[in-house]
Length: 100
Image (cartoon, rainbow, N blue to C red; front, side):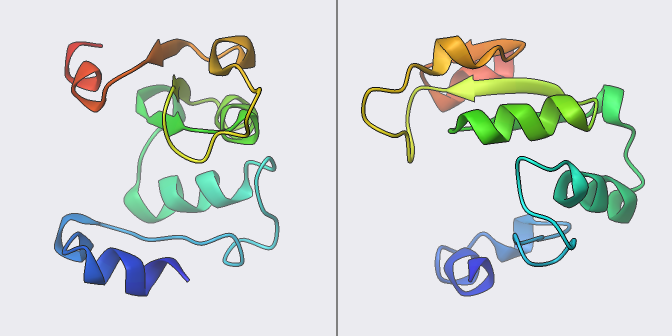
């Protein structure tokens, strides 16, 4: 599902790896998809930042040992408060990632 979207948006050439929910045997909030990405990239969890727009993203990132960032935009369920998800950081604009 993600591949045609990423390609159409012209982002495919900027992705080292693309993993969907059906690639790792489990979906978020299980950490398996994030662990698969790190394995494919040779990345270490403590040096990896995971940005999410849902509580299950933050749960998965924490379970994988990653630094987590909650965002205030995206597919957030009405009434949800990203500040309550327990992420390491909370941002309101994408460019804020550059200053973390």
